Length: 376
Image (cartoon, rainbow, N blue to C red; front, side):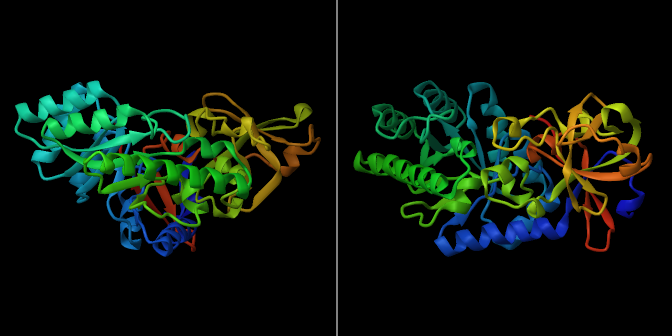
């Protein structure tokens, strides 16, 4: 297949950009002396993960146990399920471990720690467990100086489980857009996670793993003293939110949606395309940032950015391309019926999730179908 003959809409991966992004992150973290465990929720794609592991990644991070099952079946054994464990999912986790998967799970409260321990003892399974640490008030985890951290660790050890270490994610890093601010949040993530590890060790509890990561902090960090591994996901594709944060150029974004112009509203300055929110997703993450890209940045079929145009609105199967400077009177001439365009996404994870497969595009325009994994 060739990109110029694909049906639309289609999710495209620019293989050259993807490989460049993989090399950039791996080289940076190798230089800082830490292992890299990529978060694969962005692509959920075996071919992408194989490229990450070939570059030097040590294990993977997943957001669903279904991802863990599918990647384990594809040959990946070392997996962290980085979402808080609940009792109803323990049988699924147990089955994976019994099949030979080196699955590690996460808790951030006593109830979960007790449940994991009780289930493990009942089934003669010594689960490997990480405690999630809250480093920025973004979402989940235990604050590093909270006594609950020690109590959860002790509950796991007393319950016969393996306390593998601590894990954190500076999700608030997405809210910044200067190098200085990203440096500050990267150091905050590092220092607070290391502080949690030190407190566990001072209490006589094991803490071999100190795991941190988000794409902005991973790429910005200048030293990672006390950290053993980093996790990051969206870096492999990048997107418009990451561009606004300041960690990538538009030319680094490896994921796009191929679409076709199917009509016009000339008096409104609209070109209508066949990629609506079902192809782009409803994510409007750039709306809260300094530059709003609507539902995506418009590019030519070959990937050249058309700075003046975005997908300004979207229905289920229709997208509206318009000029960012207001109504234009020559929209039909600019984008005749049948014109094919690429749209760079706001959020690579959300846009990828709209498609059953990617079309991986080579430098010669040839394409190969790369399936995505689905489910929970």
